[in-house]
Image 1 (cartoon, rainbow, N blue to C red):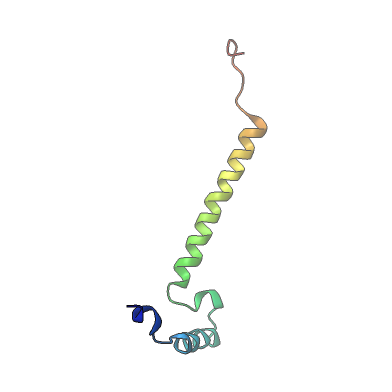
Image 2 (cartoon, one colour):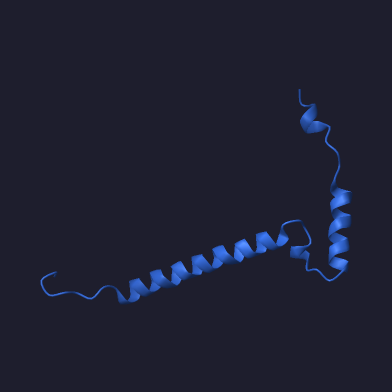
Length: 72
């Protein structure tokens, strides 16, 4: 019943050889795994969107909306 979870092949040496090969040929560690560029670029994108939200929120908190006559 649990043999699918317990009896799994050990892929660690295979993945370690892949990472060491890519790093030895000049690739940064964070690009060594498959889809590494996708993960790093999506992280940068989410980080940029988050920082833009923080800057926009800070700006609106500091300066706010101008008060129109009659809205007091």
